Image 1 (tube, chains in turn brown, orange):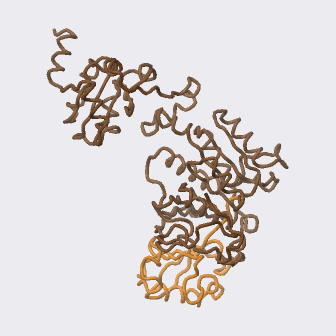
Image 2 (cartoon, rainbow over the protein chains, first blue to last red; image 1 turned 60 degrees about the horizontal axis):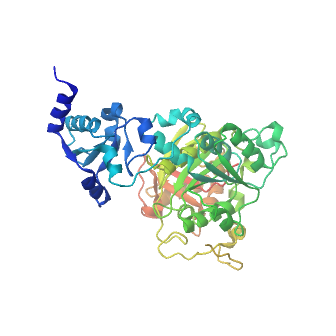
Image 3 (cartoon, rainbow over the protein chains, first blue to last red; image 1 turned 180 degrees about the vertical axis):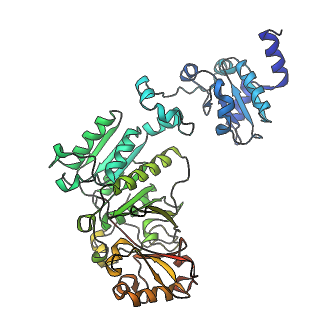
Length: 399
Length: 90
């Protein structure tokens, strides 16, 4: 019967090791290997190598493919002293990984050499419990949840679409949510705008929204802008810094303004719109795909584009479309999946059906095209009344 | 006959129908046939003889502007989607 020492020696004879100095040089290079920390969670939380991914030893076999899908790619595994990582390296070899090395001397030797150690921000015990259904998903994990908590999302409108999207983003732990809306809560809103309630009738929507979101999740910092987005205030609001904009506006001037600002500031916009039984969702990511103007170079005449206030909307429809917007937003923040870039998803609540059409960036687009003709804010109200945007008197420069 | 999907904002012109049939060998011919059957639609989808800039026309999920525009050939089994901009969010 072999002892632990015998077993460790036998395993070490079958694997390759790398010392801290060579690993340090390799990790600083251009083609850095995948770096996997196989220690326990409490050890990881006390500090780890920069760029490492934490895969606790017990889950190594089942989760390694998410870290290193290509079995021929170089991988360095480490633990505290180099023993557990030796067994881990053997396991990875058995799984078909051909370029695995175990860090000799482990984390202890790395520190002794004076190399950088990353002290991770970690979730509090309360957060670990609150977000456990997220952190259990390998694609999210604790790192993804921390990313969400560090994220900043700006919502245009706290109405039909803004209600479900902000509720799900707050529940998901998106750390900072900005809401811009100049309206107050009206009885006719409550058929669908689930951020608000009978007790908040008459209140500014941003205040009602802030209370609802913070009651749902006190981790979330809600920044309110009780104003209507326009050419004068857009730069001030964007200067607060946003990772993603969720567009749930109810009018064309705001849609075009949000588009132009997002292209100039390179912020992705998760677009949703609704009317009666139908909704549209897409993601406008500057330069990666089309912008709103590529899709609709000019707005329809007002008589062809009735608003929900004029034409009505099924109350649950914004719930579906707004939730799809929250889904796209979380994917963009985490960098997972295929966002709806260059694809417009159409939902028909009556059939019900989802239809997808493809959108292309227009090289001659006046804003995101190769030779843009619109480079500063225009009078969007006039543009949407048929002014065509040619009149640029009083134009506002963007940062 | 080609199936044409009518968006909610234009259904007033088709008696509330969500999809209608129209015939023609090209996208332009199908849309002209549609406009002949439902005259109210003409002014809402055409501008100066072209598809209006606030309406997109998709053939099998592709924007016809990225194909051959109104000259794009259409088969009988095809579905054409008319898609005007909608602003509603509240």
